[in-house]
Amino acid sequence: MSLRLIYLSMLASVLLTACGGSPVRVGSDGINQRVDVSHIPDAKPRYEPRSKYGNPSSYVVHGKRYYVKSSSKGYVNQGIASWYGKKFHGRRTSSGEAYDMYAMTAAHKTLPLPTYVQVTNLKNGRKIVVKVNDRGPFHQNRIIDLSYAAAEKLDIVGQGTGFVEVRALDPGQSGTRTASTQARPRSELRPVSSGGGNIFIQVGAFSERSNAERLVGRMPRTLGSVFIHEGWNSQNRVYRVRIGPIASVDQADGLAEVIESLGVTNYHLVVE
Image (cartoon, rainbow, N blue to C red; front, side):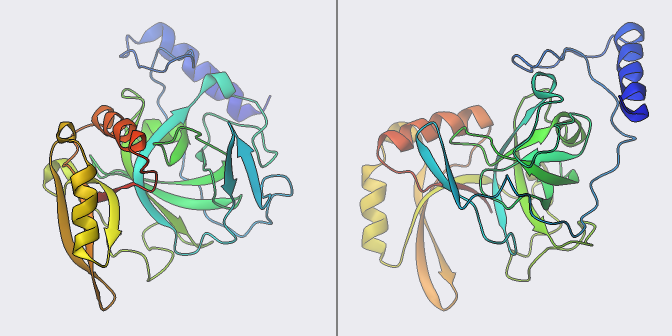
């Protein structure tokens, strides 16, 4: 065992015996006490060869095929993050590296391994940089699975999940600049909870308003506010069908189940 892991194990033991820290909801991960991870630095983007084992052109999990991206350049997405911890600590990741719950790493379904990304908590504005070295999460309504340390830094351990933005970084970037000028100019997001925007589920985008109206008509009233947001894509007008605003991950999960039951699978979260 490395000196770093020995130190962290001793630190965790001290915290368990000396502190009455708040319990956290972790499912079967077996962690019931917070660990101070403030001393763990963010991952530093650097050039690395692609993993020999973690980058097949495609792979299948639970009957669904996922296609690995040829490049992470310009990648930006907003959605729900989850995290994984003690249950997987020490196990081999998809890249071949051992999973370290105290390292700043993450799992993603389709980004090349490794990829460095900046993750922003849309509720409190906290930002971290992690190395994507694993595959997952294989929950339909999740876009990234964070290590325990990364989730703790974003303050989503207690809830188990959180609304985030994931943005790919070029090697050498610290996370203060985005990987591509094509990405949305929201590199310094304000917290949603303090007026920085609202979260919606977008279920479709059309060049013809009549098609958007047809989709709105398919949405049951139990979903709440379903509306058409008019905007532009380059020089073309686009009609986006959205639901919300969304107040919580539980609400987003419930809406996702209804949306999928209607046969709509190409939906995602947006912040406006």
